[in-house]
Image 1 (cartoon, rainbow, N blue to C red):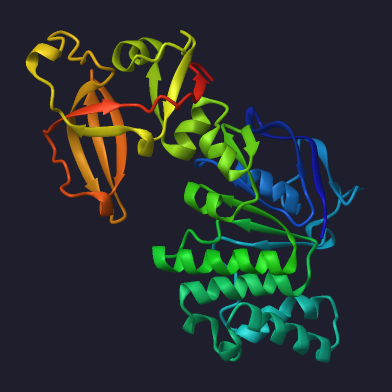
Image 2: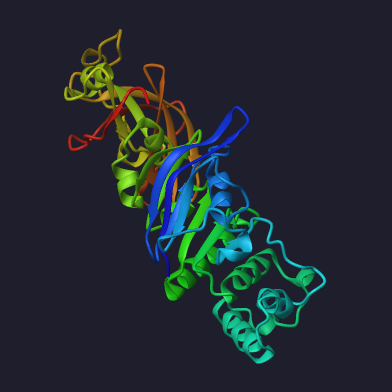
Length: 351
């Protein structure tokens, strides 16, 4: 296991600053994810850790040893690529054994280590199968086994599940999580998939435009975002201005430079039961802390139903468990919207 320190790391390509100066401490045995949209700098940062790119500024320390100038093969860091990078003319066993052969390990040692890792990734019955005859999920597990077999101090994952269908993604991420916990290898995982990062990680760094917006546990990121980008990217939060909070919901604790961030599952909705006399004909707001809106779209995804609601020309997303539904509300229906009084997740208006 290993501690990894990133100190004053930045990367520029000409005038383009791909990664702004940053400092990170990744703890021994931790599963740490870099999460953000395409082009945010997360893969560039991972490649610098691997030694495939040199930083413009800063240094990397592995167990307090400066590895910044070391080439990739001397860093004792494993890398699992997005496209697997397997040798198609070799068998599963030969692909996994390749790294050990490069290290000039004895044949008996190679055999023992490969057989052990094959069992861990559930591919013992595929040892002599050619790579083209494997499914995508099996190929990804071969790539994982090849990285694990050389016993790296740090294991890097570059969006390893993006080429798999949904069912295989869930299965393979379960394998990755289990193996990481069993081996205790310090791991850094790059992904743009919020659910994936939340499910796998001990901590997550959320990135945008080369800047780390927040580093925290999955729970803290989801329920206590530091700014509007994190709130929208992680939880797809709805944002309500101070004026809207006060006039619609009777919430007066939001300052003018703040917004209230409310997760879709926290929005309370129900059929509009008010009479015309209870509704302001101009603002269409009720007099009891509930706002009147109109459902514009309904999206059923199995476990949940998502509603897109027009509230004073602002789109509000609300989700409800489909199993709890007696009858789903339909597009065009008028609904009342309210926010639980214990919601106080405030973020700055501008970030």
